[in-house]
Image 1 (tube, rainbow, N blue to C red):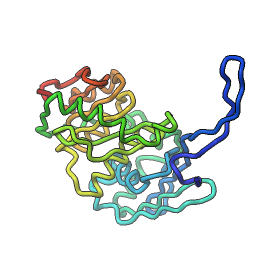
Image 2: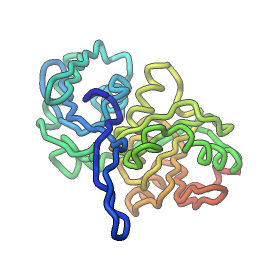
Image 3: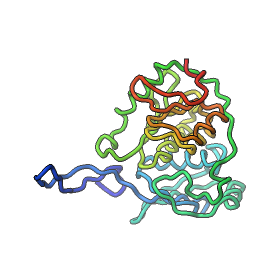
Image 4: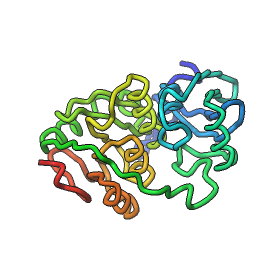
Length: 266
């Protein structure tokens, strides 16, 4: 195992009642990843070291740094002793907009506010979702129950999140894992962008709470349904209601709560 693997093996001491023993197990790996746009540092995120090109595309799109995937001219991934650098080349006008909006900041574990200086930049204007997606509740249940089988890192470490994109029939098409729930979602949306898949034709599932940042990212991508295995926050519900997103929480087995726009699930 190397520093760029999603999992590392580590020794530990196990305590059970009055006994003590030596053991080894897999642990989730994380590395600092620096996002550098056209030569200018933007933000450092703690990420799982995998699918970083997907992350670069997804983050750039959902944070409004570029508006289309084809605006990203080139991505170079450079691994260093202390972390990874994503050198992302974008058009000059996009670089100028980014320079006016933010300053380089350090982030922790893919927090949704990394690189954001002002409240207005954090809670951005609501993006209306025009997708006409509808789905049967069975598709929602099937996708949620299938997700666990697609999380090899979490199965070994119990320490990372997953995000997935499913077709309207509930079939999972893209699943990504990361220590940060925002990173996992950005990796999924980045993978869809790179493949030329329209995200609005399916829906998203995350293995975390539904925070407002995740709803914002779904709205920017044009996805009309976001489901989470935990509960949503109040601001997440407010943004989902305003943007036209169906927000589902506590998706577990064949049960779920619908917090906004329930008409989309038949």
